Image 1 (cartoon, one colour):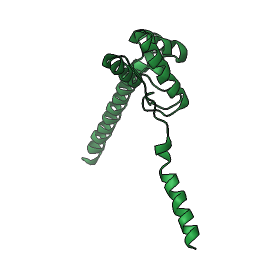
Image 2 (tube, helix red, strand yellow):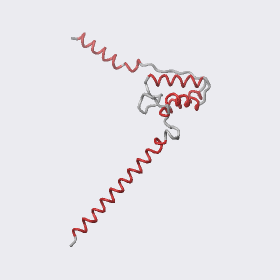
Image 3 (tube, helix red, strand yellow):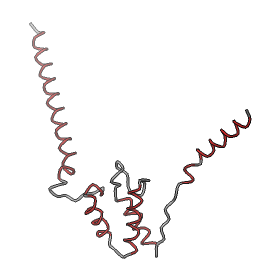
Image 4 (cartoon, helix red, strand yellow):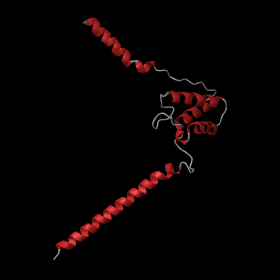
Length: 143
């Protein structure tokens, strides 16, 4: 009985320590400005596989590849616009948290405003209808 409990404890410890076994990406930079750019860009770019997660926070393989590509492009001397442009060309405007305003992304920019205005209009119309019914009900009660 004790050997099976000991085996169970060892297995439990192995399961608990699994996150510690995961690989941590370590990137070397020539200076702190490059490192700051890397962190800023990886927070700015969205993982194409994950829902609303930056490539810096994602553990998906594609995010790891994207981080490595950002690192490589920074060391090659590419500008931030060139790096973001590369990923937009490859994955589309979805990959950025701030897509440009153009014909294809207009609904992304105007959608929330249109939904808010539409919702406000529906609420106003419902309130007017309800107050109109209340007025007619009060008129019916009086002789």
